[in-house]
Amino acid sequence: MAIINNTKREINAKIVYYGQEGAGKGTLLRYLYERIKPTLRGELKTLQTSGGSLLFFDFSPFEQPVFGGYHIRFHIYTLPGRVNNPAAWKMTLKGADGVVLVVDAADSSPAGRQSVESLRDYLASYGMSLHDMPAVLQVNKADRNRSATTAATAALLELEHLPGCLSTALNGEGVLETFSNLSRQIMERISAESSLKSGQAPLPPSSMAAPEYRASTATLDKRLDRVLERDHTSIFPQPGGDVVEPPAESPPSPPAGEAMTIASLPPETETGSDIRVALADEAVALADGSIRIPLTISLQGQARRFLLKVTVEPETETP
Image 1 (cartoon, rainbow, N blue to C red):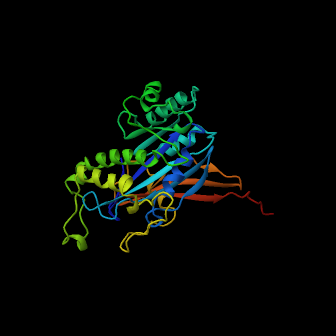
Image 2: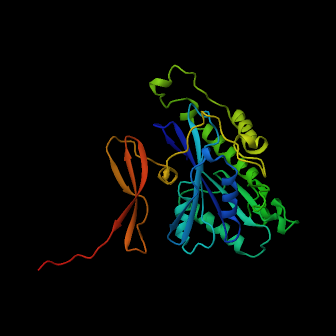
Image 3: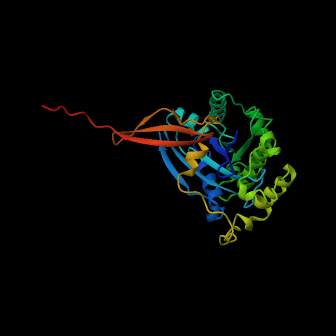
């Protein structure tokens, strides 16, 4: 489930691009990033993890609130290239609200099927499944296999229930359409949450006098369709053109690092008034001799994730 930040009145949804090595996940993420206005996106970051390299950024597609006065922000992750430690994928998929499953249209080896089976195992460890969460099958590198179809690929991978899209990451064909499809699924699920539909989250005093905007699923679908597909000038620059600057009232991008502190949180947060500190994941030993410890700190129903870096030095004995 998406993380709701009542203080900022923001809904944070985590999206993971998953797939085998060479499927084009990193290229897809970079193309999507380049099509977004710089002021509406966070920084594209790379973080070395145990057994892989994490690529991620965040952006908010709508300038107005869309759910009961709340803005929505997408946090997008992938592990490009070779992933030496499967636990890196498991960590990245933790708390995901939607998955883009990327497969290589030109690769007929069993690697794609093995990758899907691994994904099912990772999700099952968190009590999730491709049958009960937003997901899209992206058949990439379609330019290298003109005979490829999403239906045939889905049948081969036993993913007939998933919507599919052909894409070519190098020229952007199908990239925005895939993201638009998954975004709609996620927003439809968010809009179905009773706490947001009924407006149970209290408005701050300064906003009580203003009319609250509450968009229906159909309205959101039309707005997202206009933003991500037809009217690229509102968020995405036209191919070969300059980036279109946003209006002056556009909200600024979040501070650096915000994507990691919000989107990597597990779905559950503490609701008590006491401060609670919990180990979010396994500690990782770094090459410089230090240790990185991921912590989740909860206070009054709000939770954030922090990375504590500890330098380990041998104890010296005093005479």
